[in-house]
Length: 314
Image (cartoon, rainbow, N blue to C red; front, side):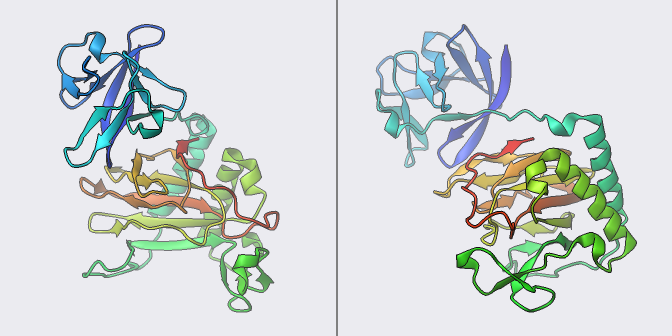
């Protein structure tokens, strides 16, 4: 029995295969070259080898740290880009397995049909390119982007007539009118209706409060730089659609360390935009449509939700 995962290695991740060798222990095999992670019996060295033995057996703890066959954890040596064993001192442990979350709701036929419907609608959107940035000084450079929903801005301006209900948002106003009641093109109303249906299935509680949906189009040459969504008050749901390759969403923790790269094409990823994130465009090909449900305001919330530390598919 085996499954794919990622191994947190300093500031990067390594694609690995976790192979079960008994009820407790596993082998950790690097996909790139089929080498096995090994902890030497000298209780110091950690290395990769091509033949599995007792030295290559690991236990994955409840919080996903690796614990060697002779009861040692490991810490990362940034200077040498390597790990060393650190005895039973779990507080120093940095060698972790990031298990792949299992897609559930988005596998159902009805949800897939809604996603296909949104993709078809976005493929027919004709808008001017949002930015023409040659200096790459801005955070986003997209073919186009627009939002629908309960946006915020300066109180009293542009429909932002309702004061924000959080003390630290003083001076902010919210557009609380229903999208269905606004004078919008028919295609935007139709897009909102399908997006609203989809999020009500994914997270009913989320959908019952105010939220915003951001839609965007990306082709080669566009980018989304590393940033945080500082105005958010909760986690968000992010979905990528279209015929494309590459362009994973890279997520970071509160210490600016990489959690992992998440490929959410035809999947919905629950993630917190208040933590740093970016789209990795190195091998990107095709056309990528982005749909993100997020909250700037919710009449039921007087304080922000806790940070969601681990992204997961739903």
